[in-house]
Amino acid sequence: MSQQFGIPSHVGWTFAIAAFLWAYLPVLAGADMGNELWFFGSVVAGVGFFAVAVSVSSIDAYRLLRRVSFAEPEAITPSDTHSLVGTSGLPIPLSGDREDEPKTPFSGRPSVYTDWTVRRGDFNSSRREWKHFGEGTEQAEFSLGDGTVEVTAEDPRTFNKKEHTFTIDLSKHVPEPAATFLREHPDLPAPESSDDNLQFAERYIPADSSVTVIGNATQAADPGVVCIEGASESVLIRGDAELARCTMRKRVYWLGVVGIVMILGGQLLAFWLSAVSLTDVLSTL
Image (cartoon, rainbow, N blue to C red; front, side, top):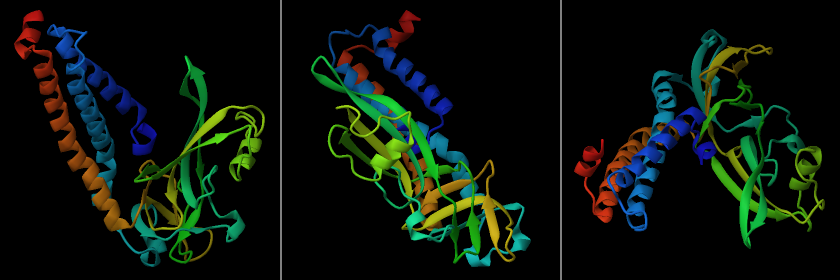
C-alpha cells in the first residue's frame, strides 16, 4: 500500500508507530483484552492514520503543481530551460520501434513507469501466506508533443498509478512476458522450476493515456527539442494537468480531513466499546 500511494518509508514508519501508540490507549485505560469489540474502533483509527500519511506525503508535490508554470509541450522553448516546468500529453517511446514500446514486466501492459513486487505463496498450518520475494522498478524514456519534449527524468515521484495483481503457478504454463522476465532475472524463480505460486503486483503509469510531467528543463542534443530530466523535484502523474491537480488536491485535503475524522472517531468508538474513559488514561499516567 505504501508503494501504491507513494508514501516515503520514513513517513510510513512514523505514522505506523503513532497509530500503534494511539490504538494502545484503551488498553492503557484498562480495556479488557479478551473483549475484542473495542478493537474495531482502533482499526478505524488505523485506517485514518494511513489516510493522513498519504495526505502528508502528497503536500510537497501538490505545492509544486501550484507553483510550477504549465505549458503545452510545443510551447516550451529552449529559452525556458534550466528551470522547473510542467507539461502533459500522450507519451511516445523515444525508440520509435513498436516492438520496443515500454510495457509492464509481467503482464505486458503499455507503461512508462512501473514499480513491481513479487510474493511467494507458502502454506503455514494449511493456510497460504504470501511472503515478499522481490521488487524493482522499470522506467522508460519518452517524448511529448510529437517529440518536441523528451522526458528522461530518473526516479520521479509518481502518483495516481494503476495497479494490476495476479498469480501464476510456476509448475504450469507461464505466459509471456512474465516467463521472459523471470528467465532474465536469476534472483527470481525460473518458469517450471518449482510448484510455487507467485503473486505479481504491478503499479504503473499507462503509456496509452495522458501523463503530467514536472522536471528540470534543459536543451536537448537536437536543436529545438527540450529535455525534462532528473531533478530532486521531478514528478510523474497519470492524467493531464487538470486531472493531476484535482488528484493531488483530493489527496492533500479530502484524505487529510477524512483521516483526522477517522482517527478521532475511531478512538472514541474504541473507548465506547471498551467501557473505559479518557479520564482512566489520565489517572494511569
